[in-house]
Image (cartoon, rainbow, N blue to C red; front, side, top):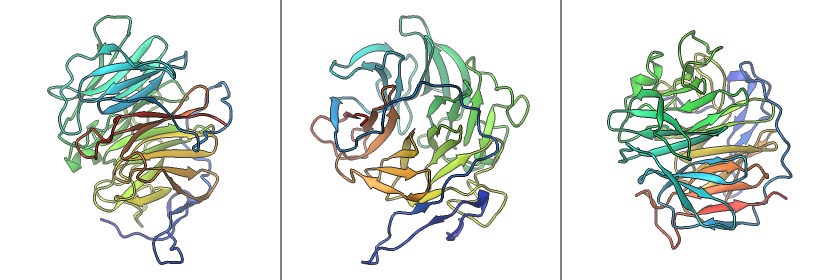
Length: 362
């Protein structure tokens, strides 16, 4: 693995690690994120009020069994995936969670199960671990069998990826893992260890870097966070192995280094992260952007990281307060939703776990 250096070579980005007065490591600093090539063109979107008020938490659901995927419907309600049961719950502030669909064929085990969710029009999209692979289906909660739109993503006890989201260009982006088989990440013919870009029907999207291929970027270990800012810049959240977790600016056709690089490197074949944390501080999963801040939910680190996209120091919020944090998302009303992951077999379960928290816009 590569040795850390103080300045990132790619795209002129600088990420510095400082020390506080007592000699302990201070949170890393990120330079302003520049415009990048390969950014998708943002579609017009309604403005949302304010920024999330992290000082005003509201618990809106408890007793959820390993919540993983979270996606909002046009009416502001949320759909939440339970990893181990295959259930999809509808949750709205002030209401009780109710099951609206159960995805057939989910084979939970290890890090696999019912993972990411996305919503487009009347369709719900789900990424899950089946008996032979990881796959993506779509369905309507009103009823009917799910339609498989993409399959053949290698499953494993670990590193199944699983985050899916529609980008500003209307295409479906998919974060996959290497299934603990590292060589897959550099094999352009293999969908594992990649970010994929698909049409809503599951075909390779037009304009992908390699014609006829679903691959948008490669060299990933385990992507579980995808987000865009108002300028169309895409961010990918990456689990490291033993040293460095990463936040990357994702560009079409670029290589992010795994397994040849973990964290920043001098090798100009690979794109450097804009920020990296030690794995005990992060093990990051979901991500969302509100205003000029990227929010990153950390599992092992048991905190919510805030990354100022205009430059400055990253900041850890809620360290240890809620336990493991899996998914963070911004609702249509500008509120921030955050899920815990203490019932996943790796956390200390607390009364009411797992829970979903909401932070209103201010």
